Structure formats: C-alpha cells, structure tokens
Amino acid sequence: MWNSNLHWLKGKFHFSFGEYYNEKNINFGVLKVVNDEILIPKTGFKTHPHRDMEIISYVVKGKLSHEDSIGKKAVVEKGEVQYMSAGTGIFHSEHNNHSENLRFIQLWILPDKTDSEPFYKNFKFDWNKRCDKFFHIVSNKNGNAPVKINQDINIFVTELSQEKILYLEIKEKRQGYVVQIEGKSIINGVELSERDALKTIGSSLKITSVKKSHILIIEMKERQDLK
Image 1 (tube, rainbow, N blue to C red):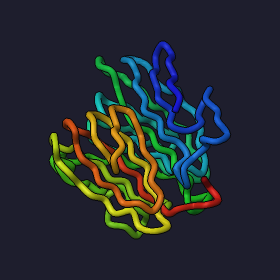
Image 2: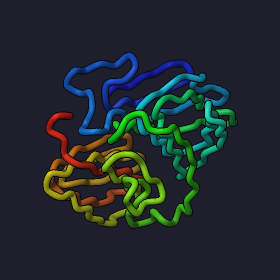
Image 3: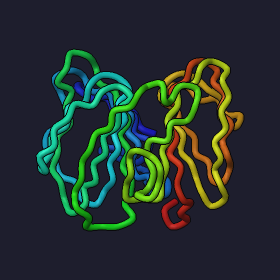
Image 4: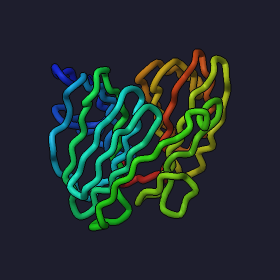
C-alpha cells in the first residue's frame, strides 16, 4: 500500500496508482484499483477521461458530486454507490463541494468486454440493509445485486456490532479482497484495523468484529494470468 498526502487529497492506494508504482503490486485478479481517498472541502478531481474500465465509488462519509460527458449529474452520500462503465470513452469530474471532508472507496475493475456503451448510475440504499449481515451491492449482469456490472464479480458490505461473527464462502478457484473501512476485526486469524486489507484465494472468510466494524469485500474468479 501507499499513502498519498497532497494538500487537498489524502489517499491510501492498495495497488500501483499515480505516483506509486510497484511491479509486484499491480492488481489482484480483475481488481485494478482500490483507493481509500479523503478529499477536503471545495476540492476534487477535474474533468478527465477513462476508457474500458468499470468504476465503483462507495461513499464512507460526506458527499461526492459527480458530473460527466454523457449528461449525468449526481450527489452521492454516505453508504451510497455510484457505478460508471467507461466503455468506449467517458469524461467525468468528482468533487467535494460541501463543508466537511469526503471519504470514499474507489474501485477500478477490468471489464469482461471492451468498447461497450458508457453508462452511469448512482444507487441509494437503506443503511440497515448492511447491519450485522452482508449486503450484496454489486454483481455481474446476470446476478441479483442492485448494481450490475460487466464482470464476474461480487461486492458485499457490512457494518458489524462488536463481537458479531459472520462467514462468507469463497469457493475453489475464486478469490476475495477485504477492506476494513472502519473499526477493528479478526479475519481468518488476522487482525485488521481501519484502512487495512486482506487477500484470500479459495479460502472462506470468518469475520469477528473486535469493535464495531465497517467492511467491504470484493469476491471474484481466480485469475492466474492476472496475479
């Protein structure tokens, strides 16, 4: 991981990104970027392009203001998700136009097809859907999650009470990436504190919340060619 500390942005980059490059830490399967970012008020990312990438943003705190070249505008708040499929090409900006710090988790996922039509949508959820249980927020196009993207991937989020235990199956030839957003937990015997992460390949997860924990899990097909 890498801690980026600019005057307007404090980010933890889980994989090579921006000024951080590590040839041994480029991606984890189709998961290309996991950035845990904090934007101070009245700052943000100016308009810039993307192509052939599935981009998920999960807001932890504050409000994220989005605008793009396909005419979409939105304000995404705590616990909500925005999904942008860059496809053949899209320009967008992301800002914190509000008075408190904005923290969000940004995920870049390699798509299962290229040159698709660009797409954007934001999703609002009842916070209680994730309390002491897994809330399945992202799946592939044939899946059951509310956010459906162009890749064989599942994303779950949970907020666990202290000492709560949950299990998540990771089947053979599947892999998972866990982000401890807030709190502290023990996962398969490993203690994770706020902003830590854990990888698993073919091993299911036992999650014990040491203190109230907010956790994001990305589950996907194992890809030997994309280690």
